[in-house]
Image (cartoon, rainbow, N blue to C red; front, side, top):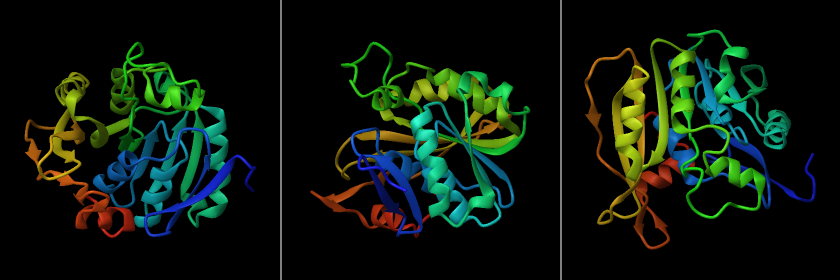
Length: 247
């Protein structure tokens, strides 16, 4: 199934398999943290915006046997690899992938048709940093095709009343993220900062919002990635092994 430029990688203790291009945009800890953070409604429908290799739909379907997952992906090569990886994961009847841009979700889906939306949007503004010569990486990391507000607006459109949207984003843009979510009437409900070490500043933030929810924010204890240099913390190891989900 693989071309010479591809790898088949297993995550979450080997329960999930994905196909990735060696020189393209590859799975990061950010997406794994997001997957472990979200707690889907049992029996509900989940959509992952900008699904990439499909790890979020594959993992949520594997860990929650009654959940149906959809991945929305703009880049055709990444979409094709995610679809091919369906044959590597025993969740084919509950996972599907759709081609599309978050700016045009109304062309593919009815409003309020999902219980949970997940998203790892591009972190960098269009003119920030040096453009990556690899198109996959450039689109995944920079706001070229869509900006943060487009992703949040798409999530608000797709969510049912009191549905939940979970995102991972740079901690430095946490205020902007929460402001954009509130503007789309997706009220931040749970927030968790992620830091490399216990004595360093946070680099990422995980936020879960509720559509038309109340102003009732829970700030969770920070998640520390490393116990010491190159040694994962106990909780981070549990995330990677797939033994901790929903927090």
